[in-house]
Image 1 (cartoon, one colour):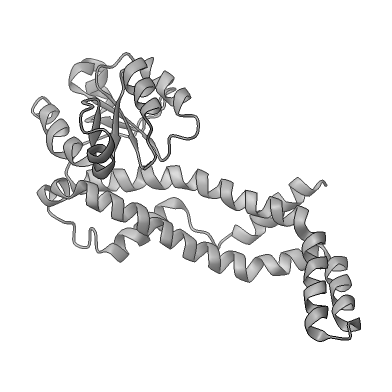
Image 2: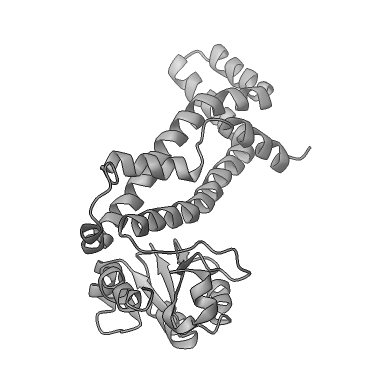
Amino acid sequence: MDLHDEVKRIMGRVRAGRLPDSATIVDTAFRELGYGYPPPQAAMVRREFDQRLHEAFRQTLLVLERFEEAAYVTRLPDELIAQSPEAFEKAGRIAHLAANPSIGMRDAFRSLFADLYPTLRRVFLSISQSRKTRGGRDFELQFGRLLDYAAVPYQKVARQTRTDFMLPSDAVFSRNPNIALVLSAKRTLRERWREVAEELFNLRSPNVYLITADERVSGGHVDQICGQYRIRLVVWDDVKQSSFADTPLVIGYTQLANEVIPMFEQHWV
C-alpha cells in the first residue's frame, strides 16, 4: 500500500464515528445560535436574512472545528505512532542519549518531524480537502434552513445541472420557467465556478441565481458570471455595497429575500 492510500485509511479510521455529518453540524450551529427553537417569524428571518446566514456560516465552521479537534487531537497521534513506530523509537534514542535534555528534545523533534513530514503533509491535505467538500454541503444546508424559516417554498432537485434549489418547485419550472427561480450554491468562487455557470446557462432559464459565501468576489467573476452567462450573483450585503453597488446583476441576500423572491411569489399562489 502506498503512502497516499495508507493516509486515506488512517483518516477514515480517525473520522469514523467522530465527525458528524453536515446536517448534524449545521443543526448544532443553529441550535447554539438560538435559531429555530422555536422557529422565528418568517418576516423577521427575511428582514435579517443576510445577518442570520452570515452568523450561521461562521458558527457552523466553529462547530466543525470543535469536532475536528476532538477527533484529530485524540486519535491522530495513536495512528501516527502505529504507522511509524521506528521514527518514534529513533526520536526517543536521540532524546535519551543527549547530554542536555532540552537540546535532546529539540533534536528528537527535528528527527521526528523530518521522518513524519511526508505523512503529515498528506494528513493536512486530507483535512483541507475534507473541509472544502463539507463546506459546500454545509452552506447549502444553512441556506435551505433559512428558506424554511422564511416560509419560502423550494425543492431540492436531482438534475444533471448544478441546480441546488428550485423555487417553488421543479414542476412549476417545467410548466413555466419564467415564474420559477433557479438557485445554485457555491461556497467560494475559486474552484470550478465556470463549470457550474455553464451548466446553469444551459438550462436557458431567465431567472438563474448563483449564491455564494465568498467575500473575495472580483470584477472578473462578475464580468463572466453576470456578463457572459447572464446569471445573477448573490453575495453578502457588505460585499454588494462596498464593491458592486452599481452592478444590478449582483445583489445582496437582503435584496434576494425581500425583493426578488416576493416578486415571484405572487405567481405561485
